[in-house]
Length: 367
Image (cartoon, rainbow, N blue to C red):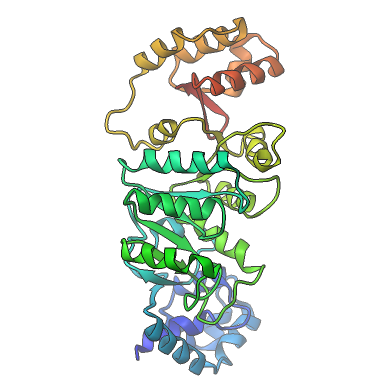
């Protein structure tokens, strides 16, 4: 039994030592060295102090780590520690990255292109169509699809990835000795068989308790290049994930819906508050992420805009955008001479016509 793994698991079991404190400790010591270090050395570390140092020195439950290793072996689970090469590099940039992940399956957690596709558990037919359309478009770019294996949009995203031969990773809110919901067990096995994976920071035996899901959501947001919210209400896990992605300075996209549809209220709110880029075309996502083989030239974008029938305010804004590669909302307000409400309305119409792209940071350019 690997002694280093025993100490790595034990570090996640010490009371008052969360992921942030573990990262501080691991910047100065290996996991085993932390438990053998003097209390005076530990308590001088910023963010540790005497209480946490005492918790480390008094820890005696190493048998729990040994038991976890045995359960991992039985269930075909392998550990991915914070310092391992296989650890998701994108997660390392997040201040609260998990100390230890558990993985079933061979998926590359550092694939060059990774997208989180998330949404409501009670999707509409519109949500299903949008999810499948988006995954179809991402197939040629060989994007790894990440979601949470839940009912609704999550499951549709995983199934679409399997259908298109894309690797797909499910991040779970419980131990990998089980699958929740159990109705998705067959899909989980197929994901593993097709080069995907199940991923969790929870140990075997940990149940899918309600408070585990927000914790899980930060992994979905942190390990991907961008998060796409397909369909969601004004509250829920998808909104939490989008907020987390924003906090990690990740790109967030949302597919708009009718303003009378409560299932799209969350997406519309994310767009309205500039927390997500309005996404109306899968090709838009591919272009913004830089995943196209031949980037669209500026001249072609301008030419496309000329063929759209536009209102006077829209023509003014399109003219401004034709002069520059990217323009901020403040600059558009200044150069256009229009009221801020007129600019906002014109930009929204241009986005819906796929003439203008909304970019993170309240920036815009021609599509």
